[in-house]
Image 1: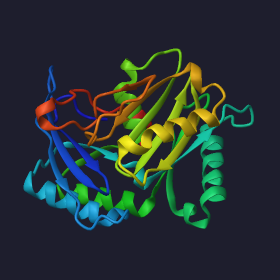
Image 2: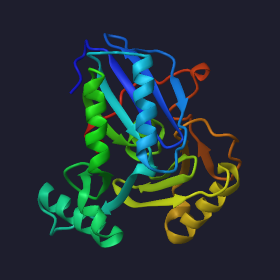
Image 3: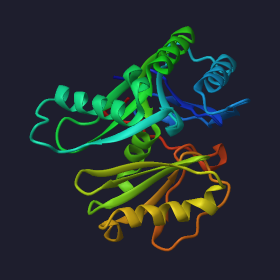
Length: 266
């Protein structure tokens, strides 16, 4: 957990860009403008992004701060853990999630760091390459930072936007260049799916939303909310869709003062 009086450092790790935002602690946490850098040679692997994040931290040292890292969905796999009477304990749920990832993605998944959110009901499991987690922790340690939370983009987006989402039900799309992750929430998680986007967001996201509606018979009664990870290049114009402010806005657009909920950390 973060100390209420220690400076907090929020970091974004994505194949297309990395970002850093300081939040001064106290009674009224005050975020500083975001510092962002493009990733050179980002081919989908996490190593170039990690190098870029290291350079960004070196240019803006904050030794002793608490580090909260949002990890792009490009580096995360998601799966639904059902509300099943056979999954009694958290270990049962974690074992189910691990087996599911191996079944779907093959033996490589045996080396992934898997976490399951919550301790009851249907939940979303997230998996990140264990080598990435170890390399990230080592990077934070070299920078003198205290690792407090590592969150997949979907969980970070849901926790940040939760107060704006309808309680009756929502299909949330957390989108970034090259990928869209959708999850349905109706008094618990009901579905999660990742879709690769080959074309610009405004061109392909409408089709991705239509595909999700076709796959879910109950989708029409849930509001669709789109949450960009970073500012989108174009505004989405689609009926029945609410576009939320980006999770990592440009500095001029203002910064959210809330911290991520570590309960959904990966």
